Length: 457
Ligand code: UD1
Ligand code: CA
Image (cartoon, rainbow, N blue to C red):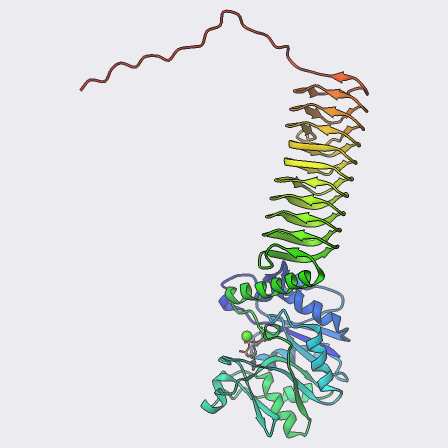
């Protein structure tokens, strides 16, 4: 089978310089949603018809298996499909999709293909309460005889509620001759793809139809309002799937997944969490409210408290993170690690049972097991030109408010006194401290406030 995706329209109502089909839904361009579904059907040929936005669409979508056909100017849907013909295999049926209709399910398209069989033309149609703007499906004795566009329809035809979604399958061998016979003698002066239905009927090719499981599968995006609407539909579907699976969601209307989220058993997710890229949560994981997780692996029994931002990281079993923690790319936490409030970790390994509970920056570091990193500790990893690593060995205790000036090693089992600026390695098992001695100034008195002159009336 061939698949043609129409994506040349300009999307004027988006009020954007980005071509409509490149606007993201759940973090991914509209057109990528359609492409992924198209690919799941393993087409022999896949062609995207583009126009508005110039090379932006092919540049964003470029891949081995896709042919691009430029439609310039845009003279209608029939004209658009015509541009794809050189990229198609005329001995195979052709499925036509729209690049701005992102949520059609594979099952629905499979049903449409099955209904077409080898020799029928099949249209995906849907009954709408308000069919305004759509092409109407005209039937005689139950059989589809033609599609009439809103602007060309008679008042009686406008009463028809069954509409053309635009998605159809054309049997092998007919697409080219039928498109060549199209005329633009209609209300919009366009070459309508929909005119091929009457053509099929006139030459005795059977025309049939299939229907989507839900109306939203056929909805297109012409404005930001419609885009936001479909985003909510998509997110609601994902939330429903998680609930089905046994995940607890504090509010299924307040979770956004822009990528894939895999959850183990007894996972609980509080409100307003955003999951991006590939996120895996193990068994018994809890995620507090207002967290953002992007490309993260979370092991069993981890608790992530409110307001954490976690990116390209992995968190070992039974660890506690947050509230207000930031784990940046390259963070790897072992088991039962505690990362508390206002702690930032970047490109660091922190081994089992270690803790950094308050206000710390751990960057480019290798932290051993059972290490305690006190409040206000900072790894000074950047000298303005290069980054250097800090090594903190097992069982070390770094007192509050220390600066560890990398490259530096804190030896196994050592203590670093509070307030130390560590510029050289601290030996294992010893107390290392760098701090000005405390002194008391005798005879010092507090300054007193100067008396202001009295105000005169
Ligand atoms: C079309 C159908 C109509 C159907 C409706 C569903 C025709 C003549 N009409 O309406 O029956 O109910 O879709 O939404 O087919 N496009 C191009 N090049 C063009 C024109 C359009 O690539 O020259 C693409 C658009 O980017 C869009 C799709 O085709 O993805 C549909 O175009 P649009 O203008 O939205 O649809 P209508 O022609 O109004
Ligand atoms: Ca449209």
